[in-house]
Image (cartoon, rainbow over all chains, first blue to last red; front, top):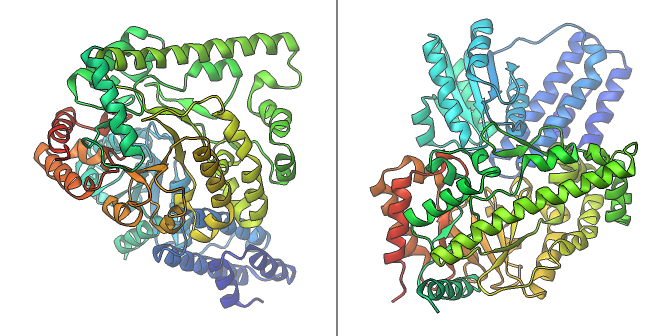
Length: 212
Length: 389
């Protein structure tokens, strides 16, 4: 086995060498699927430390990007021993960067933090027209829709997407959060979203509040 | 000397004063009104790319309908799709409306193991590895004649872009007594690595895994940055514009280790050559103010995007001039009265002592970056209210 506290702290410290060393040694012991799930859980708790340090402005976005990378690599190492068992999900999020905007860094940070917090995330990708959000919401019936954008033109696309969800009669069954550089309180009101954030960690907390 | 020429010279003096962090005659109103101008006149940026008449029409419209003293970025575009078409690649892509964005996946053309080669010989490394990987035109199997003809076409497109920029500048100068205050563009070395070699995820992995290599590559790229503006002569009232991309995302420890050494050395070298450097502090820089205090005194201008600009004035106002204050969001969403209130507060708090340039916190690119009625009102207001008595 492994020391869960040590693994969690190593992820929180973004100490890649240590995380990889612990996980390699762990995988070499040929652990059960359940034990492998515990390792995933420890890494995810480490991500929560990263999120806290980000909110305290100890870490910055660059650290979050690296943390996402670190988590992906950690899960990759664990894959052979993870099998098909999956942990319980706390909710579903349909996520995408809106039409006309090609930025994905913020969206990806939010995605890795939301997944680490236990959400099942359906990532549509970048430059997604309203119809793609509508179709995915119909298909997977999420609790939450997350729209991301960096350019100010994304604000128009976000509004179009909310309007399309309204027209499709889906608006009332979901919560909508918008995130990225241009979003503000005014923009959020105009767009008709339920919440806005420029901070991925805060965004995840808002989503957790919605599925409690 | 006609009145327009006189107005232009007076404005150049105002900008020279303010750029050197002195008190000018009045607070200058600066235009960063770029492709917004097309939307204002019911066009899209694409309409002006190959059509000089449209460019002339929108340029005249924004300089007639709104008050300005100086232009940082006008509606003539720097990035033309034809350029990347001829080169067969590049890091940009264009929306249907003609706005450019970084093309996902297009930036990262450098392997992390290649830092030593980049550090040893930046030009050689880029010729040997980066150009062929980025542009189909420079692929090894393309014959010399095709490359040669391609490069001629590249020059032709660049010439067209330069002509459009000159056309805009001539209209601004000769018809409106304005001037383009951007003397040249320069990129901080580590931002070059981010923007053109490794992309976000790549450069962040490098900063964590091989910080010394990123730092040393930055130092090696200073010459490259300096060469890019070697022919630009310093001129009173004008600055070199340095858009800054990575620092807002770096914690102060990483910033100090990898970004600061080459950034500081580059700014020092440019100031030594007589330039004033206008740094666009994109997003927030509050966590880095302590470093910025060590930039050459009164030889930089900071464009403040999302920081509390009053705090910037307090912390850095004795070291650098500051530009901005009015968020494009406010300009778009708020009422005229709210905008005027905010702008009065900005002049009251930021103008005393000089060193303040009134403008939007970001370039106005899209229709959502400002409401014309608000823009008209605030610019007129500053023109009257921003006079030093």
